Amino acid sequence: MASIHEHDKAVQAAQNIEMVEVEDGYTLTNLPDESITQQFDIDQIPEKDVTQEMREASAKEDPTSWLMYGGGYQQQRHTTADVITPENVEDLELEYLVQSGVASSMEGVPIVVPGDPPVMYQTNGPNHAKAINARTGETLWSYTCANPQGLLLCCDANNRGFAVHGDKVYMTTLDSGVVALNRYTGEEEWYTSTGDHEIGYSATWAPIVHEGKVITGSAGGEYGVSGFVAALNPDDGSEIWRTNTTPAEEWAGDSHEHGAGTVWMTPTLDPESGMIHAPVGNPGPDFDGTVRPGPNRYTIGTLTLSADDGSVQWHYGESPHDVWDYDSSAPKIRVNDMEMGDGTRDVVISPGKTAWVYTMDAGNGRLLERSQETTQHINMWKMVPHADEDRRVAFVPGAHGGNDWQPPSYNPETGLVYMNQNNAPHEIFWQEAQYEAGQTYWGGGLNDWPDVDAPDNWNGNLSAIVAVDPVSGERVWRDWISSDQTSDYLWGGSITTATGLTFTGTQNGNIVAYDGENGDRLWQFQLGAPICSSLSSWYDPGEGKQYVAVQVGGSGWLHGGRRGSTVAVFGLSE
Ligand SMILES: O=C(O)c1cc(C(=O)O)c2c(n1)C(=O)C(=O)c1cc(C(=O)O)[nH]c1-2
Image 1 (spheres, helix red, strand yellow):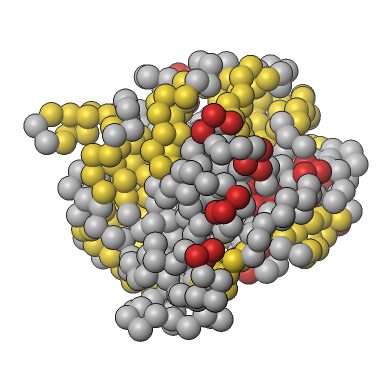
Image 2 (image 1 turned 90 degrees about the horizontal axis):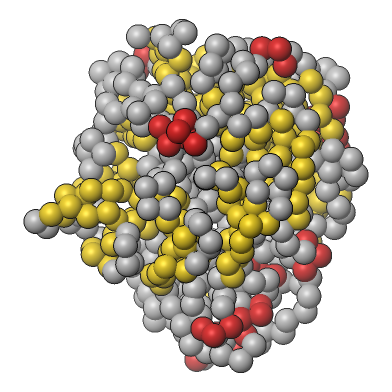
């Protein structure tokens, strides 16, 4: 098993950082004022620059790589590696554990660049990263980013992973920045700030690189910022374009200025058409709709932009004028040439917090299919908080969805979408919203389970793993995860394999493999801490093995504290 280097200064710097709970959020103290890279055995990293072609082949034509957060640009989270099958998955073994050394939210997806050996690049909060020999688990370099004090974070010090291009890897930073590191040495090459962290901008998602652009965006939707997607030059971090998600012409008065609509999860990209499908979060303030009359475009839904210049192509809204916090934050799935009706279509699939899966025409955003409900629908849309301050109604899905940010997966072999869904009630209360820079801008709040009385016909299951046919909208199978199996919501993503498997993780610490056709649980392994991340998988031809990696440890936001520090890697030989 790989261990932490004793004198890892980057780890020590990150270990000193303390997360402090403040009203309606978190902040960090003891952030290092200089970035720290420590090199260990960097000679092991094979020199081979990553190209656009390699990324386009990632996980599909090329089973040896997992070069992006979503596997490939289209975020299907599908590997063509086929060593692990429904018949032999029970032989899958734990190969090694990497201790990041930093107790933090573990929400990232390790990316893997093929080579001899393949190299894994992994990030976790707060602003910490490592390059790892993907065969042995040895740390090759480690890095902690400098940050200003007093950051405003709604939902923990999250970081969801790297993008890779040429000789560089790119990660977002909690002060709403992007940093480029030389991937052979771990040294900082450039840093760019994309938003003012003092008024609540922060950044948590894994960027993507496409045709000479690093695509990024910011979190901060709970602080009354105004969302955006931006493209930076991969060589020097200079900004190429920026598109605002709350355009003045779509909003009443000046409400767009604090209209939120943050893009805080990785967008999906179709390299063929050059379209970006961005998941857009809640309007601001979250619950007081009186200050923002109208549909509040482009919040809560899919916003499609041209990767060339950021121009808006279309938007599909899942909850216009939302007052239920139904962000559409889960990554979208792009599928081209999907058999539908009497022809084929290019589609975008969005699993909503609304517990519906939306299948849209990728060209114009027209809704082609809305699925059966993935979990329960109780009192949905009935609760209009500002209509009656005293009226309290528990509704399902609550603000955790359906599908919160948990990344869904798609398997072209089964034609199904796999999602980790929540089924918990929430109750909203309303307060008049007053914007004050650097303060949360909620306009009310949520009473979280278990404070709220559950509705009568709620089935008591907090979550479910669900497979949906995006063509017919049929819910094909659903594995309810009862509260005795897990103490909390499902908060991790899933991946699929060429052999029809679906891998995911649960809050009670199991990594699980399902038969994607019918939902039979074929294998599970207890990792001892919640899984709040998605996974990656690759084939290593040098070893003749297929690997599956998952970061283990709770989301601080969900658990009120930082919990994790482990990357677990499983393998099976041919
Ligand atoms: O509006 C935003 O900008 C924003 C950002 C984030 C984030 O970056 O993690 C979360 C949320 N909102 C959010 O509403 C939420 O429930 C949430 C949960 C988590 C998490 O990592 O567990 N992040 C976020």
